[in-house]
Length: 135
Image (cartoon, rainbow, N blue to C red; front, side, top):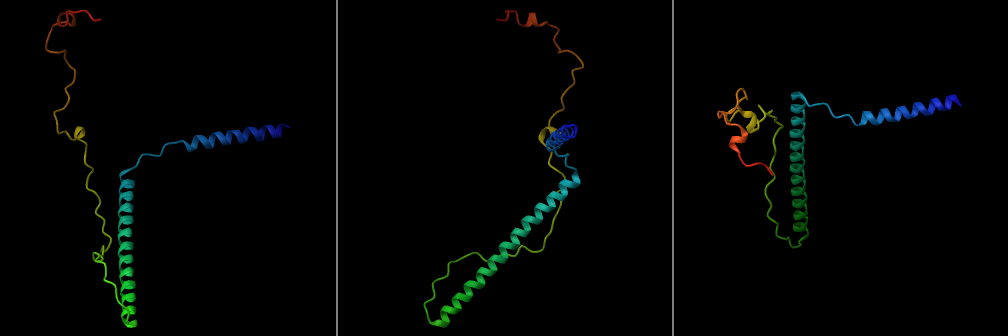
């Protein structure tokens, strides 16, 4: 009986511990990790361009083969639909971003905030400035 209680308690503790670990936030990204992620995204985009280029070439070859077969059989050849030419994306080249663009507040584009080292320039109290009582 004691073993069953221990086993039940242990399984409950493991269940709560695993759920607590599952809710931990991801660690903050380092600049190296951000650069690696940007390169991976650029490589994925380039790979998609290469895939579409290869697909375009294959479709052109198939259309040419069908057209040649129709000409050889003496059948009428339909007018080809005008399409843009296949563009080769070239070799993969990644230029890492030099520096992230800072938001306007952090770029120092405006005057810095003054510190509250002294009271406002007027020596009037609030009661003198606003004589009407608040409602």
